[in-house]
Length: 148
Image (cartoon, rainbow, N blue to C red; front, side, top):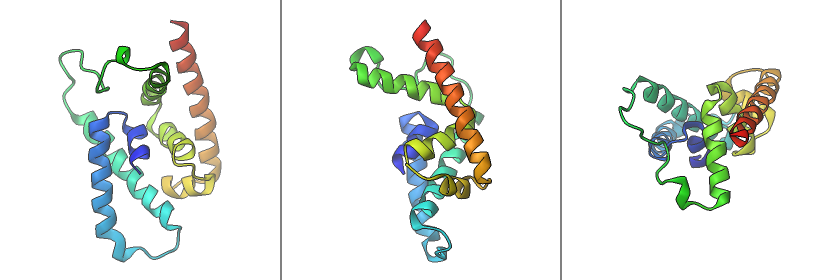
């Protein structure tokens, strides 16, 4: 859940807030879980919704006036593997919300297309197209970052 929230939101602090809100929501909604879906799918849906709610809250915040970074420490202090992860995180943050969410649920949470469709409330074909378009845009963004 934490990884899903972090990849959807990118900013660690905001992702932790979303994870905490998701956990509170799960505890509150647990008595109403009816078993029509897998428990893990139900939890990922709650986590995804909490993360998307946090993204909406973030968009309503005033823009920072200085060069604040979404990362907690400078990239120069990181290894190349962490630098690459930061590049992917930055690229993910540039994707439209629905593409980013589908990619995170597929590649971070390792959910199948049907589970992603249930969580996002869309048909499986829409999940497939969101993943394809998201991957294409992600590759373009990462390619442009490597070219600079």
